[in-house]
Amino acid sequence: MQLSANFSLEELTRSEIALRKGLDNTPDAETIANLTELALALEKIRDLLGHPIHINSAYRGPKVNSAVGGSKNSAHMSGHAADFVCPAYGTPQDICHAIMDSTIDYDQLIYEYTSWVHVSFSPEMRHMALTIDSQGTRNGIA
Image 1 (cartoon, rainbow, N blue to C red):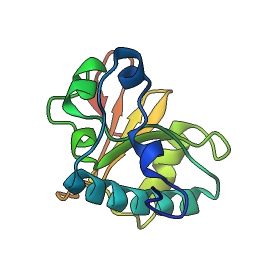
Image 2 (cartoon, helix red, strand yellow):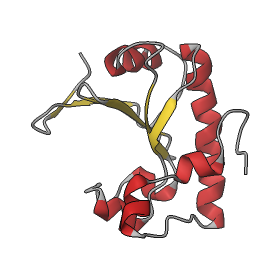
Image 3 (cartoon, rainbow, N blue to C red):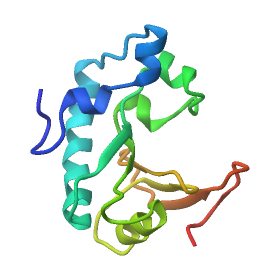
C-alpha cells in the first residue's frame, strides 16, 4: 500500500527485529493514518535533501519497540516517527542542520550520534533538536 509518492506502508513497518523474533508489527487503522501523515512529512525532507532517504525504522508496535530497547513512550509506536539516513546528501549531522534551517515543522529532531537521524511529527510539534551521543547523553545539535 503506497502512503505517499515515495513511501509505502511496507517500508514504514518493516522491522528486522520483528522478522527475526516472529513479532507481529501490523499497525491498526489509526496508526496507518498517522503513518500516512509521517510519509507526507518525510516527502518534505526528501525534497529538501534532493535525494532518496533510507528508512531504518518507522512504526514499531509495543513488542517490537520493547525488543529494540525503545522508549516506553516512543513516537514510533504511534506511527509518528522515523529513523533514517541519506548518504547521498551527507552525514546525519548535516541532515539535522538542513532540517533545522528549513521551514519543515517537527516535534523532535535527534542526531543519533554518527548513525542516523530520528524525526518525529507528534501532535505536540515542540521543535526539540537534540544529540544523543555514544553514552546516551542528550544535548542540543552542534
